[in-house]
Length: 66
Image 1 (cartoon, rainbow, N blue to C red):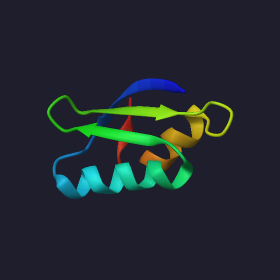
Image 2: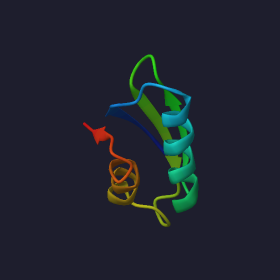
Image 3: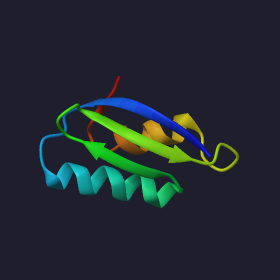
């Protein structure tokens, strides 16, 4: 398992948290959103999910991954 911390802009409420964590779960990753630091801690299996898929899942919701 690999863990990364992504900076994500545009998150402001519990709906944002639920949307991002849900989208990551759908692709097989575990996400933990921290609104205060505008970050998402993501844990995933590199053989099943790529960084590109993770970024796309978040950006498709309208957020910006830095």
